[in-house]
Length: 184
Image 1 (tube, helix red, strand yellow):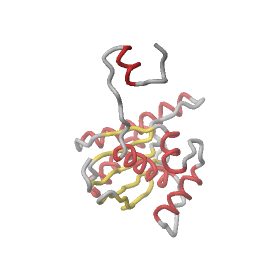
Image 2 (image 1 turned 90 degrees about the horizontal axis):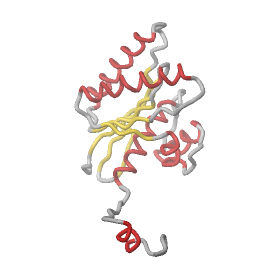
Image 3 (image 1 turned 120 degrees about the vertical axis):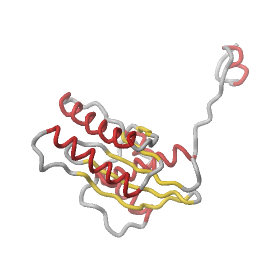
């Protein structure tokens, strides 16, 4: 990841999809824009998907992100809702792929943990932390926008502080490199 780049964060939804654009400059992040895509005027699910695709394409063309971070859908009790959510996420991914942008997915718990330190934080708590972090005087009425900024910021954190992984040739190598974690 270069020192200066733009991240598009997306909080998928079939009724309201949040987006947030972060600019990273010399290790510091700033919010470029945030908003929502709300295809609520369409009753037909396929028309909603087309609207989402067109709007995500417009956001990408306007802000020219270098990468896209999406919140991964979580499984709820309603299978139909999950299916619709997955489809809306898929069309957002398609727009990113059309522009040859790399895509990264993050679980909702990981996003909330990155912003608030609590994996089960509410949308309001996420928005509050972002407001304090970026000195925002006003928050959007729909928290999907701040959730999308949180996804982008989570991606920034993950990419700027990658997890160190160790490679092991065999079990003896693992034991040698991890004294105290395994007995011989």
